[in-house]
Image (cartoon, rainbow, N blue to C red; front, top):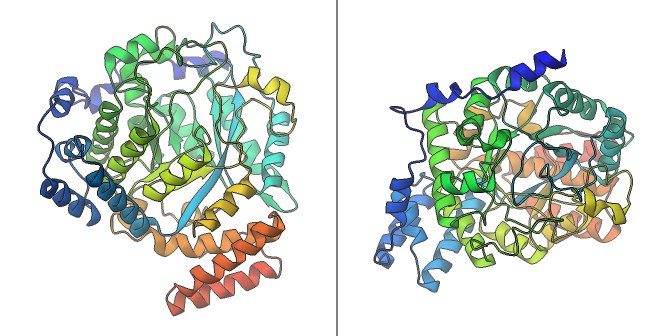
Length: 485
């Protein structure tokens, strides 16, 4: 059985053939470099014309995105930030989706020079959770109030497709008195179409594969050995996932491996290619991780491409403007102050109570956590603190997973998002799920500020929708759970 699994997940170098255009993939280095060549700074009217297109929720092309990347005037950047925030509010409304990462294994066969999990790092304590341990980790996360997880696996033969599917089934089957996990997303090694079909069958939510860097030469340098060294196998992972029937996929780049502007255009071109090949269905989310320090890893200190806070925010703003309908994720890699700014200008999801050491939720042993972590985090905020902070910003922390039970995924989600109507479904359901969290898990200060926000946001709804939300709130107050519209 194990041999069959490994044969099926082995890299197939010819698998990209069906997705290529005239033998070429969608990342054409020369084209991107030409767009990024030093040119005259764009005129204010050029920038404003592009911003107007984005505000009308039209996707930008690479030339338009590159024009925004060439802005030098600080005042024009402020206009771009404001436009990006306006676009996000128009599509998604005043809510931020919450989740937690669950690291199930740090065993890895790759030698990524920036990563604490790399196979030649002898300072890491290697762990692979048993299904019993996954059940305990899940219970610990549920007890914090979480409803949505992303499960993370090192790339290793021990974390086979059978182990991953068993993990997902175990998480969904785990319940406690006050909750359960309703959505499991995945970050794992690129797989074959056959394996992605197995994941779709067990109810996988979003499939996340980050290209890390779209710059080929850099990709080769930072991934010298292991299965991850194959650029195209990774580049077309989400095409294979879509082919297999997983209609929610997620892209990202690890900012700080190469020129951040190159990565922004790479992410946009990735989005365009997915949309062109899969009936308009591009990525459900884009993530913006930055290279962070990792145990026994020298890359961070000598990195010439390190991305500063302002440039990371510019990357977020330009992609929010370029693909206005796509969700965007900022995580606890970043300090709390920067997370807030990122949410103001475009991000729609963030994590709380995040721990990235394998087995660190059920057994809190800080002295051992560092030696099981892939990198360091910069924000230790609990989920309760995140919910409170979002309420201070006037934003509903959302635990909603209704769209996935109602078929609002893939093509259907994109149709709604491209019309700017996500908020019509998500804000009412954010109110309902926040109410559930406040009653079951919140501290008293969070309960008070959260309830005040619910009343404010409810008052902004159309009368018919407000009545439906009121009815749902009454059901929750009398003990019913998982209420959604």
